[in-house]
Length: 271
Image 1 (cartoon, rainbow, N blue to C red):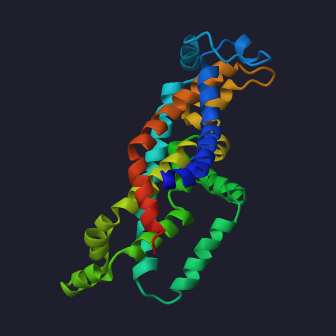
Image 2: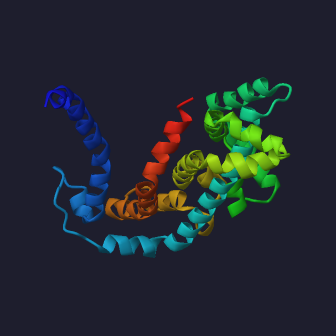
Image 3: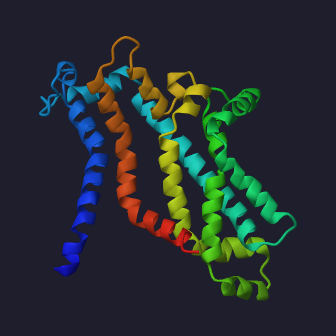
C-alpha cells in the first residue's frame, strides 16, 4: 500500500500519456464508420452510424490488394537486406580489428545527423539511371541498409561474451564462420528488434514511394492511399477506412512481437 501510494502520480501521468496516444487511433476507427456528413459535422459526432460500406469503397477506388502486395514485397526485401548487411557491418565494427575502424564508424554515424531529404535527389538519379522507376527494385534498394541498424546491432554484439568467440577461434573457425554460426544466433533478440523497427519504418514510408513511383499499380499502400485525398474535397470516412485497413497487419505484427522488440532494445542499451 505504501509503494502504491507513492506511485499513483506516475501511474496517472502514464495513463494520461497512453490516452493521448490512443485517442487518434480511436478517432480514426470512429471516423471510418461514419457517413461523410457525420465526419464533417460540428460539433463532432461520437457515435457513428456504422457505415461498413466505406471499407468496400476503398477496394473500389484503389487497387488496394495490388498495393498491399507491393508493400509486403518492399517491406520484406528491405527488412531481410538490413538484417544481413547491418549485422555484417556491425560485427566488423564490434569485433574485428582493422585500420581506421573507429574513424569509419564515426563517419557512418554522421549520416544519422543528415536529413534524409538531402539524399532524395542522388537516390532518384541512381534509380532512374538503372531504369527502376515504377518498379519494386526502385522501392527496395534505398532501404536495404541503414546507419541506425548498424549502430544498433554493433551495440548488441558488444554485449555478447568474448569467450564464446575465442573458443570458436581456437577451434579453427574463420571470422565469417564465427559470425554466421556463433555470434549471429546469439544476436537473435537484436535481430528481432531491428526487424520489427525496419518493418514499421518501411511499411509507413511515404516520401520515397511518392517520388519514385507514379503508377498506382506499382505503389505501396502508404502512397496509394494518398489518391483518396481529393484536391477540393476528401471523403474522410473512406480515407480513414483505407488507413485502418493498411494499419491492421502492422498492428497485429507489433502485438505479436512486442516482447521480443522490448527485449532486443533492452539488451542493445545494456552495454
